Amino acid sequence: MGTSYQTVVVAASIESVRCALEADQVEALLVPAGPDRTAVLPSEGDHDFVDPGSVAEALSADLKVDALAQVVFDSDLIFLDLYRGGERIFEYVSDPAMRASLDGEPAPPPSADPAGDAAFAAAALAPLGVGQVDLAMLAATLRTDQDGWVFAEAWHAEILTVLNLDPTAATMAFRWAVSEDLPGAVRTVAMSDADAIEQSEWWPFPVIIYTAIPLDVDPADAAQVLADAIADQTIAMRTHVGYAPVVPGAAVNPASRFPGVPIRTGQQSATYFAQILIRSPGRQPNYEQVITAIDNAWVTAWRDRYGITAEQEPAFAPTTYDRFRIGFGHTHERRTTTDHPIL
Image (cartoon, rainbow, N blue to C red; front, top):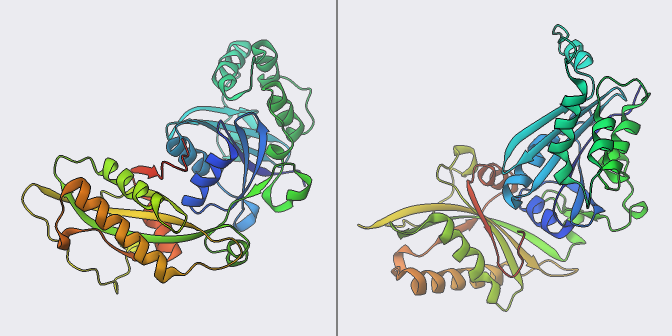
């Protein structure tokens, strides 16, 4: 049996990637791959597989950077999908004929211009590299008509090396990675992982928020107000807030009872999912104090910024981890506390 793994390389710092992944509740190991380049090893699910495309897509959208989803399959195939702004803009397959065979499809005709195809691929991938990338060398390495590679993982490592990236972590799976052997490695905190949270400085506290805002206010701008309002509290907190124009039913607990938020003429309703992170090294936060601080912060912000009356201030409640994941996954605009930027 050959080697298989799924990883992502992101053109962003580890801290930025960590904040974004923790907000999305993605468990992963993050390792430096170069200056402002991070290798992401997402935790695998069933059959030792995770879809790196969904991770790369979300990171490219959240951080507004390039993210490369990478799959090596059974030491035979390399799949590279480049994402920018939440969209896949380029796809590379090391052996199109083998891929077609695995998919049960007829083999495509050989490329009429393999050198030109490789040059196009090199130009697409080069911005993800560090410094001056040798385009000719990269194109030669990417050619799909070469016979020099026995193992796809070695070929993949060479591609990353020509991009001036450290291939060490980007060519291994989460399931066999040892963080102590990877300098600078950081593990994200998944909300479902109580043991990891116990050892973390930052404790997650997901909430859903209902509120009223003036019609002329962009809900994304209001999300920034929510995110920044908690920065100046006596409890150290930061948050990642997502605006949900449409709330999936599975994201809301039918038993939840929110106080009514009346919407008046000239106003609109808005729903947000917020991942609040509370700094409390080595011990569980006092959530009663946290809720009071958050409530005071948002009430003050809404009154000062929008002149909202008491009965229209943000109503919020803690939600379950799974419901938060579903809801946050459907948000279109996301903002983070300015004192802890991810951009």
